[in-house]
Image (cartoon, rainbow, N blue to C red; front, side, top):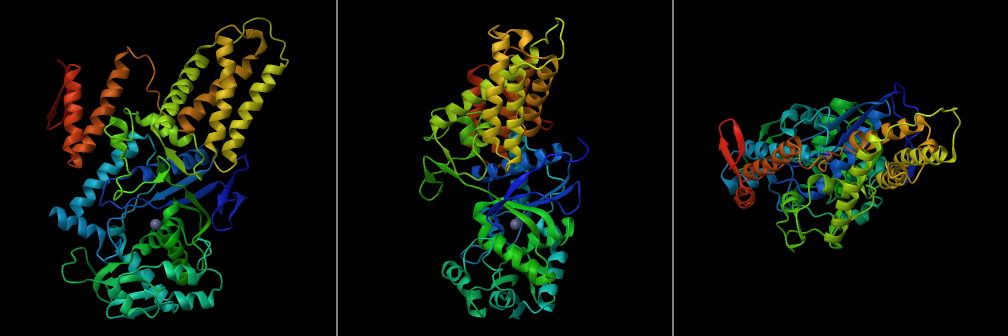
Length: 503
Ligand SMILES: [Zn+2]
């Protein structure tokens, strides 16, 4: 496909409706997704968000769009409730250089994205690499009268912005300014400096002890957290681009403030379509570390958690995520994961069976049978599911139904003559396209005796262990080493990386 020929609809948080996707530049898509804050391990909810946008990236690309996918790395500037920079706080506790912490967790994040077989974005800009662009943006906001300086810090004037751009602030999160005000918790120090509680910092003057700081015309300090995404999306995608995505929890204040900053700086809205992935629940409840209701990706893979009866492979976890639409909440339960494991294995087995079916060889008159039409309708239904706001759940259901014909053919429950060669060929192509290219799944189930699979599985296990070691998660790393030793595999860590051998 060279020109996009399908009509894709996506839900736009800004309008609260599904809209037909129309890119600004025909054939091209600019997509910005808020990336991780690398002061901690990437959590499972983030993995879901990035898996969701990976599928969107893949589907748009396969539909012939040239997609520039920008996903940032937040390595500075995220304020805590206590006003402390989260990167610097993590660093002080661990007695490490801030960039050392950022590097460690960036590597861990990339490992996890590889384990989930997501494609790398086209550009992955770091906030610390774009301080001049952020300072420029503060200048633009000040010049247009939407910012003010107090004691070396610069604040965005939300009240004035709201007065001059009625209905803009709060539009994305669907709330009105006064309601938002009641929910806005900010640190008390800067609260004193602000003209209004709704205002937010776009440049913060450093306090004694702050270690990630830069010179600016206002003070030595650091940019406000929301600023980096406005600066980097503008730099790489233009003042207005197509799709801005992120997790649901970023709608307010992060995305709301991003919109205000862009409108404030240049009078233009950053993105035409705002897309948000919904959150993961654990046994029906929001995941929360303080309540102990949480599970990490590694715990899910190893089974080392009271919430699961065993480990689930990364592809099973990914398939579990894809079984739900990205805008629905997704509840992690042991039963649901077991069902996903069955579903994943069935889909892989169906595909293998399908790819081995030989087309009919008797005289074929070119006519279409009822079975042909039924198969083609299901194939179309799978694509239509994806066209309708990237509904992977519908696509999977349609593929499963279409796949039942493959099993019937393989078991001779259906005469080979019932399916035209070209329809069989189409089904094979579509299955491969969905499973590997659109969903980005890998077949972990093929030929259990073959060494290629063992190599692949060992690589996967060692990747997980390497991630655990990077994060100084010795419990997981030792558990993997001891578990492998128990089945006769010894693991050796060396300069060139980790190797393994059968004892
Ligand atoms: Zn962002």
